[in-house]
Length: 224
Image (cartoon, rainbow, N blue to C red; front, side):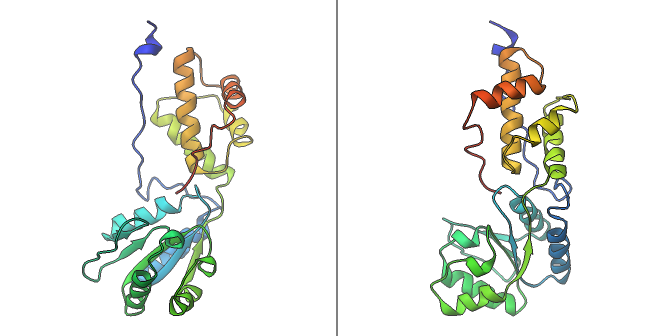
């Protein structure tokens, strides 16, 4: 057997801290809006952006820093007290009564952060009163990741795997990969695996082979 066959799978732990969040022009205004809102410590804010833009990371960092309770699809709210709340994927939640109750509490001073892929105007609702609450929400919007953010994410992922590729790999990948943080994680992992199994260096040649061979490489590059 080769050394590559003895290699154990390695997946760096995902850090959801604010320090690990990559700031760029694509998310700077949303970060500033979230910070301004968070400094007030109350009310409701919608944090929106496409899948893989980093909104889950940013929202989770806020939740951890504030000890917020979490509500997300498939989980009954069951909230205690009047502390901060993070409502993940509010546009997919399907719990109108619970969200309406939370937004009423936000008007009374409870801090409620809601995330979604689109602006609240597009969120479905069967309650007219909730519809009006959604329409009135303040919004912090993240754009799709730009090259600066994706490169920084790729560099951090490769560093966590103790890989230092040549600089010319990054523009090659950025021109061909799907535009999401999740896709960057998939790409770093697949390149690491391919390099180990083939006994190759991580470079443009390997990236070209991998991308040519695997047409569905990013099919799981969904959320966050």
